[in-house]
Amino acid sequence: MKTLPSLLFPALLSVVACNKADAPAGPAVTPVAVAPDDHDHDHGEKKPIGPLAIGAYRFDVVQLGDVKAGGEAVFELEFATAAKVPPLARAWLGVESGQGSRKVRFGKEGDHGLHAHVPVPDVLGADARLWIEIEADGATQRGSTAWK
Image 1 (cartoon, rainbow, N blue to C red):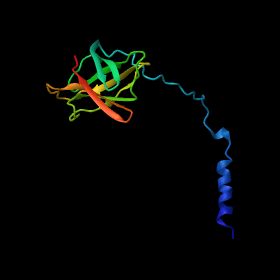
Image 2: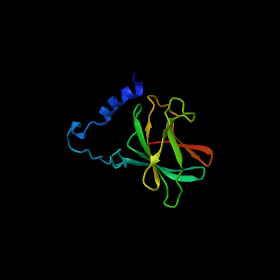
Image 3: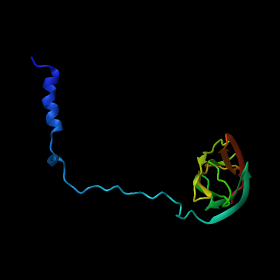
Image 4: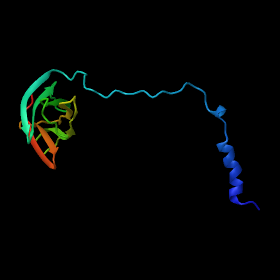
């Protein structure tokens, strides 16, 4: 009586031994490199909001386009050439607690800037502001500003 391995070996050999002629013919697929989104597309009118300092970080806040309830607002943080850029920054529109808002991370924009697409709540209270939170060196600090 043959053992199970001796019965399986011929079956496995026939699967492994298939020739390349059985493979479908066609052009070779070349991977395409996708360029990262460098935010050169238009977000609307550039509206400087002004300088802001949070902890050791000093930067200018810029709004691109309009802030519309239920939409998305675009903000940039511009740092001086010699200034350090924080490793992690978040933003949200609304109240300081973030209740009713969604926090988003800023992404790197060039060598000295950060860029974020911030969801705008459906309802913005009269006291709503742009909040920016920076995490660095084990500490979290935040500040806020009005938008235009």
